[in-house]
Image (tube, rainbow, N blue to C red; front, side):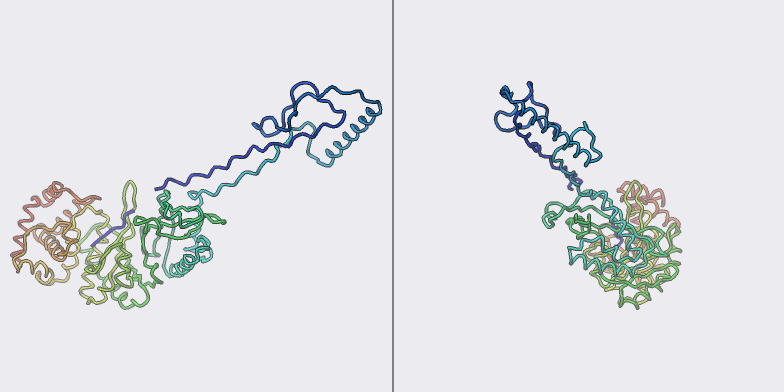
Length: 499
């Protein structure tokens, strides 16, 4: 098997500032004795634009009654009062420097502008950059500063995760938001009292001295707005499509064992299996090189999970009970898709019981997948799995019936139909028969047309989509000079002769 990990509420709107209420200004002071209103309309109110004239008790703004005759003494007192008022204003102006006579009055009761919350589309990338820097720098405090400390359970789990990540030999590590849409939805929103943002995040990393291309892994972090800004409060809350990917250090601390070409990453307790895998992997490079001449990194990372359950989580598979190992890669989406970060994940529950010969065949098979994966997912499984099995079995030199036991049983019981297996059969109940048929077909092509023609047939179907029946037949004719139906008939006769 050879799975590959592929690479909506609209964006959060900015919250508008609440409208400023049109507070009415205070009414003018009541007229003092002896004051007369000049004829004409009342003066404009020096307030905020759009406020309009002030309101007040009935009679405001009406012309005052004609003045009554006053005594001269009252005029004298009024003059003295006016002089005192002028002196008082002058004193105020002296005590308040910077205010000039005749300057426009300030707006009354002006409220300060309301500060909008930071936009998560701007703040979250900066938060993730700090988190990645803390991972590489071993900064525990910096790492935990990106987490909402009010979520105590998640905060503790992140502290544990940081300790596990310190055991991983990263050479590079970074995050980026690959899809800024908010996947939270009403179900997630109801869990939090604060604003929530849940985009799709991608981490990229390399292992020191090993990866020529980065590994891509997807996360759905739940970001919550706190008093300190946006922080991570949880992950995997975006429903079935947002579970995110799993890494081997998520389940516990890891140890490493390496040679010049191979890196084994395993949990404590699997040291013996790690040593055996390192030995057979270093031998497998020569076997793969004899079968395949294409360009590839010629290095491998083998992950040894604790058990089958963890292996299934790592590759995103439901059932690996019949699978011993999986070659897994990341696919970088874009105009030109790239296959990155090749890994071999072993099902340690099964592999721990393998003898050295079967372990050698297994790792050579998976390493062949690593070497050929750059050609894409369009190659039929007849060639993908058949070629990998042929490359792993050819150096063994065992008799044909011993290396293809499921096919030999089909022939001996009269149930061999002579048809080449389809992609669906490699995933069905009789997958072992399909694997034997595929490797037998590749052996037939190599013996009949030569190994170069076998490689050319594999490359003929390189691409990102499976070929149609017409394209498949055209490829057989172009490389082998015969139709697929003719090749199938000749291969079936050859199988019956060998068995």
